[in-house]
Structures are given as C-alpha cells and as structure tokens.
Length: 223
Image (tube, rainbow, N blue to C red; front, side, top):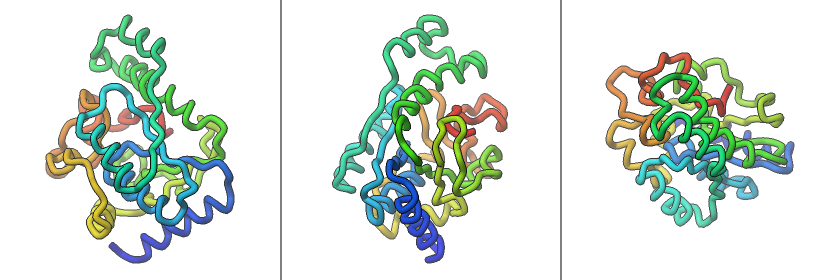
C-alpha cells in the first residue's frame, strides 16, 4: 500500500479530532472498517467505535465483534433495533418481507439500521465511515468531508480514495482480523439474508440486495 494513503488517512483522523469534540466511528466489520478502526485506535483512540447489530447478521460477523475488541483492546458500542419498530415490520411484512419490494426492503433497513444509527449519532459532532468511491456506482460522487443533512453532523471518510488492494495490503501488514466471509467471495458484508458472494467482474457491493438495480443499493445510511 502506498505510504501516502496511510498518511492522508492518519492526517484526516487527527484533523477531525482537532475540529470536533464528539466523534464516533461506524463499523460493520468489513475489511475497510477493520482497517479504519485500527487506524483510529492507533492514532486517535478518543474516537468512539460503534456497530449496529440488526438481528440478522452472519454468525461470522458476530464472532468478529468479540475478536476485534480483543485485538484492539477496547470495547465497541453495540446498538440494536427498537423492539416495537422491528415487531411492527415483521407483523405487517413477514420475517423476510424485504424480498418482496424495494419499499419493504427500505422499511426493514429503517427498523434494523436507520433507527439504531440515529441513536448512535445523537449528540455527536462528526461520524467516521469506511466508504470508498470504488465500492459502487452510488458512491463515486462522495467527498472525504461532507455535512450530512440527514443526521445533521459532519461525515468523514478517510479511506475514500483507497483501492480494495490498498485496504487488504494494510490489513495484512498489520495483522488485523478480518471476516472469514471475505475468503468465501463476500467483498461487502451486511445482513445474512441480503448479502451474497460476488462473481468475477462485479462491483464490490454487487452482492448486497442483489435482486435490486445498482442505483437502489443503499440502505439509507449514506445518501
């Protein structure tokens, strides 16, 4: 991995800490987030780490939460869906109703991800994400520093210009634990029912909500 990438990400994390007081880092335990959590823990340990346990994560991802806490020697805050919102979705749409339409899938993401995320970001000044432009067509326009009008805070993406090879090179150099699903062809990992392995030539996030068109493949966390 080019040294410049590491330095630019470190510099952005440090600048974020100088500019904001209440900062949190979102991780879903894909390789990008594992790298970012390591960089933040190394250079800016005052940044909180959090994740969303949607209730439908892969067992491998759940195990990686504990493994990562041990590796980083710090606790990762876990947010879960509110019972009433989740029960309402399942009552009206069925346990797997998200397959039936984009609207129902978005409602599931609202209950399982957006609701907990709003609680995680409440009162924060900035949140840090592992977004990369090369991940999908929906992310090519992103900026490394942007004001998120949806959640009313600044969103920072230190890995935005990193390639997939850059990310993996850093993870291997540092001995960072990664999700074993990556070795099974899962290049982007979300909820178990909505994630599959990708084929050669597909976008990184092609396995997310694979039954939908590429322009719809966001859960609402990033707009």
